[in-house]
Length: 272
Ligand SMILES: [Zn+2]
Image (spheres, rainbow, N blue to C red):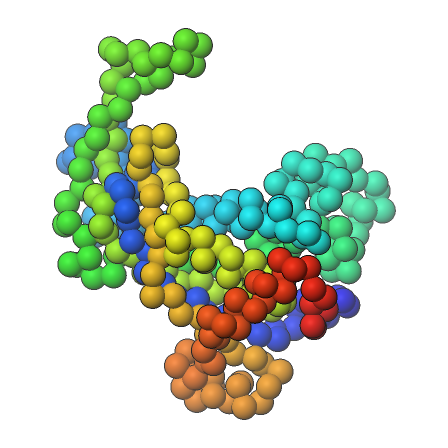
């Protein structure tokens, strides 16, 4: 792949779905408000709960990594295995450092693992982007947050220290958020990896946020749609210019499943 290849916009994907909380969710980091809690959740300026795109990307990447690591022919570094990737742990030669500094795409494509190439690394920008997830509408949640009690666990004894109770704010189960993922220049292999992760979440194996051991943060996704514009195809390009995202071609479930089958069976990528 030449240097120009990665920078030219060949295709763009838009994936939309609904994220449904199957248990309460705590994503901390919000400002203290009139709610009296040790750990408030993040909220919009209007005081509504939301899920930061970076949090969702984190769980999406981690899930893709775990599934990809068992598929033949996919390189996964988990950000620590310097033998398969340019991780921050790897000792780089002066020549390698220079190639990274120049943004030598050929070198990066060859040396980065498949996960870092898709989701980004300290040396290469991500090809997939996650928008912040807002409530579908005002009726798509209970309308009020809850406060849960937690206990501080003593790291040495691993026993709960009863006197050190704290509480944290959660979004109650059932809340529905809009998911919007954008991706550029995905190969069939990368599209299959994204598809596998979407299936994992569709099957209800999503886990978000802190306090994971307390049975919070379970979610599933539904109503998944995937659309694509192929900029190398004039008809596709013109339909997109004419009708915007409505002019993008729907990517069928069968198409994605076939790509996933090929990936798991380790068949040669058609456009590789
Ligand atoms: Zn990597």
